[in-house]
Length: 354
Image 1: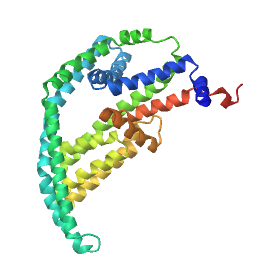
Image 2: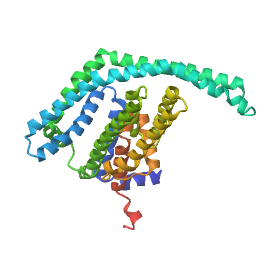
Image 3: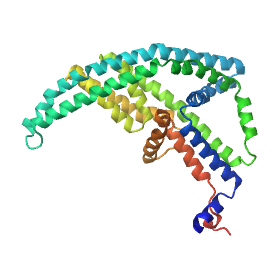
Image 4: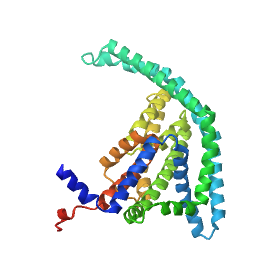
């Protein structure tokens, strides 16, 4: 007990450290327990934070602030409208088509699986193959139907549509317009002993902004290139599959491996073991290689490198807490945690002090 009390005394005696700890705990509490209720506000803050970078660049080029805000905001509205009424219906229709094709895909794979007992009689039997096929057919079909139903139910919710189509743009506009007023109000509420917190935020702000904007560009580039390649080769459900490939960059290392499965399965179901299938797979692997070895170094050259194990742990931890938002911000949050650890005051006696 004395050791614990001494640790608190040595590490939490500084008011700035206490404020930093309370700030971190407070943010985690709000996001974890009030995240559902505050989701539109949190989403608006995130989007406004991203759009503010475009406004800052326009200000550096001499564009008046209000003009820059309106140009960026109207561009965001145009993009949001296009995604809602242009992209989502296409993705939903193709997802429905994939779900309807699951039994046919399994039926095509059944012939291949049925050759396993004759080739490897000591390892697998016909009964095991039939049980595997039946389980896969039932599980995948049910999962696909549930997925489509959940998406349709969520999209058809009038309350959800009103909140995200009306309230979200309004919040984003006022966050952009009254940025300095809001930040000044927040600073007035903070205690004067907050230099440590401001210092840590200043260190990670640029890195987080660069990472998020770079990740968005990576998603768009990978998505666009993959869609062009899939459409040129004539792959079915090209928009849906390329969209999944673009989103897969949110989960480093694991995302690319997971999304490869539906791409390869649909290509095999469409063409079989032919030249078209091989061309598609090779093209897909080339895109993945260019993304990892060319695009990522170009977009994230200024971002602090984090060990792959730390990245996977961050994705699993924050993704488990906050879903897709946690996955998207896993690496920035890991960077923030790393900065806090480095800036946290240490025990003077451990450093040879009095």
